Image (cartoon, rainbow, N blue to C red; front, top):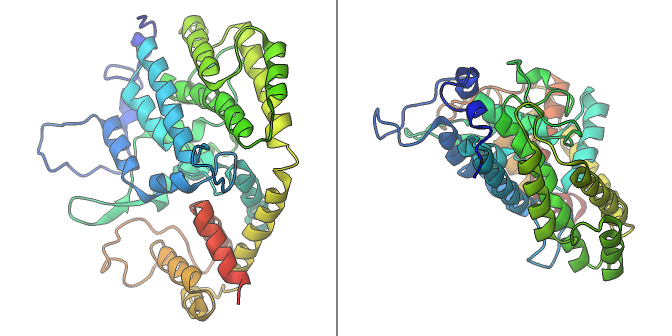
Length: 402
């Protein structure tokens, strides 16, 4: 097995090592003493898979909303597929697979309910209300830095506080692989400057691997799911088979072909790249999926439903704004909206200057100033982005029901 990238792997001795393992704050010492049982990236991995935001991915849409078929891909399964493909590539090339594993399981932690359609709707609301775009990559870093909480060994709730390399991999995974090859950037930037998706290359080769693996992972799986859901037929599959010719169009062959081609053609000098033939194959499948699946007429009613639902929840919560008295107003909603009222009031109190935060064991950072209507609007978007499909529908039904 070739290890042609081993000299640029993100391991101790790499010029970027200290930057890559740096954290916003010092992480508490583990209970087993001075001898570390896990690497910095392995600690990130276990912190993420034990947090609630990761758990909720199992009830978030990948492509198909509320399928009755248990075998249709959900967001958490997609994350697992990206981890598997990333691990294969990293091991073959000699990169740090612990880092790719940590990035892969975290990369979609900021994804909204209802998949990319939900993301677009939240972005429209955010631009209208406070002039910012919403993107799940940027939101993922916001979640792990500011919102997602985990109890430490003393039982105190704190932010996840992940390494720079993993945080960079979250925000850097969005976008398509380049024809010329994917290479990491040299600059150690403030990730808050990473506003527009794909505006910077990732910082590590490992993050570049996850970015490419993300693109490989969904092509065949979306095809299989679409066929299972009867959005496409065998005739549709045969048409793309004939257009490509070099492989059979199914999940196994697509992953095997593109992963193998990438490993064969990638070099440190030219970056992570596919052959021209493989890149063309990937683009043809993406085009087919876009036209036959993502833009399918069957999908359109759900998009209209999501738009009404998400806007209504936003307006319902925004109407309760009253500066520092907002949380009290939200609690008064309990008569009509018991679930939304109790849950949002509790959630919001975790990130504002509420007097009982330390008594309840919260030592995380303050995120929102309730004297600022834009801060409050962003808090609503943040809260909605963390919801599962099931929960956001439940909340909407509570609002519109009598």
